[in-house]
Length: 342
Image 1 (cartoon, rainbow, N blue to C red):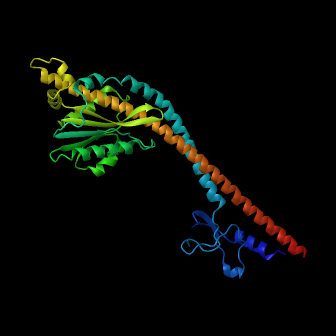
Image 2 (image 1 turned 120 degrees about the vertical axis):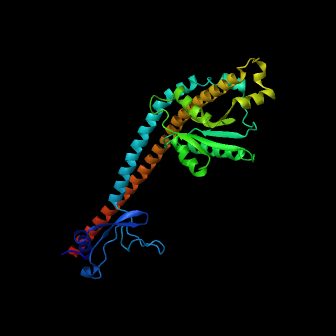
Image 3 (image 1 turned 180 degrees about the vertical axis):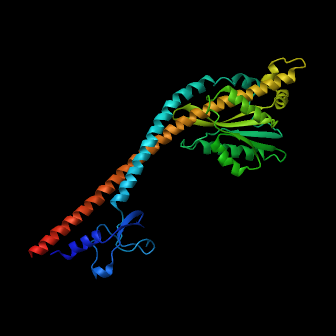
């Protein structure tokens, strides 16, 4: 006493078993029924579509999208949205403290900078490039920008055929990018600098001691200088060695305004150069850390908005697919009842 369409619907539900199938960019459900037992009968169409000639990943009759697949996707996107929203709040909380520490250390390298100068184009024989990057991701493109600047500095310095250029990386993200490009130029690297006790001048001094072991004439530090929560500027700071600073002073500079007499002149210049490197590195690391939190806050806000937009589209797709299935079932029931009455 059932119509052919109702019999086919019941057969596809009772005899078949759900098999995941990929078709048309979604996951469908293929009823594994024996077509020989059903004869020439075809299962009623519930959102089925004929596959194109170049995209036949599943046989004809496969559902283009299933409610279960959409529901799983919605749950995944919703979980991602919660994670990105929480990460944004954490970054916003850390940003204020990092900004205060960065502002407090902003003027630390200024006196030695005014005294010894900043000469990125000074002709020297050995240069060490120090890109300052982050240890973790999810912070936008600040690490990619610094690595590009570091590559540009190396390319410019190598225009001098007698130049010896090395790279010392601060941060794990920069190390993973630059060690593939400069395997023979990588002098060393450091990571998790502020994991225990935070970023301090002592940590920066230890890193500067490792850089000084290379006995370079010029150290070029590439970092992101923090301006505000919506802006950070890639910056290059140059620190000269005592011998290079002495050579630059002979050509004229702020150092000539002071009278440095006695046998301790060279030692004093060396101490000033070492202090300038440590203070400049400390200020650069604090600025880059602040820029990291600002960039992470922006990136997580964009990710949260994208997740919300995707969730709305998936919800609409879920409702439309569910409504189409219900409408089709109702029409078949009404058709079967009309056939019985006739």
